[in-house]
Image (cartoon, rainbow, N blue to C red; front, top):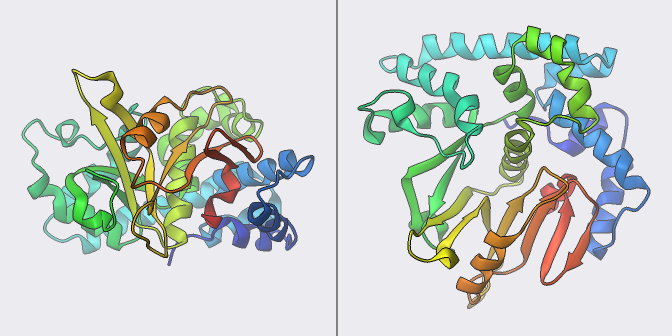
Length: 305
């Protein structure tokens, strides 16, 4: 099972009206207006708590992030125990990947570099370890696609990947120890959107989490041409339309955690693959708007893509 999604999280808090209104606005491409700020507050609570039922239950009962954090750390300990017990024969490799996830996601490009685990590490010797973590629903794997065409799986480069935590609430507890959280008042800063560092990886992780929960396989696109600036771009996610046509089947998604940002990669990608791409999305912290061929959506609308 996947972690509880945003709507299920709201149900657990006794809220059965917010998500239907989000869906109503999404279908009509209209902003939420004055309701947006409150909805983002709820979404940040979801990002902090995550969707593990024990953590959600603890938060519902006491509304205390620190007590909820203790529950999440117990779950992480159970994960480590399960790795020791069930990843027989390659438990050390699985543990290495698991422990390095926060550090890899803090990198600008967020791709997992096996060289960080071992100087002579090769993907073929770690491939089964990534599969084990994915099958256990501990992580979500996002593969590089070499081209945005129908059948992204056939265009996947399985040696170039991002490794997201399946639950963003667990990722936060996995990344920061209790002393840092208490000293920096991290949860309050994150709730108030005042966290200056690490926010980008958390936002991208929860988008991956929500896309997986709605049935999408995760793919990204990157190009690092040294000669042509027009070929240097990074697209966070690619999703395929459910009903395929002769062209325009792949939607590129850029995830933005800051209030100020550029969309240069998205525009270069649209110019290069005009025949293949469908709706262009930017997922951000602001309200819905449509501008210059790009649909800007608040993060909490991700499950509706």
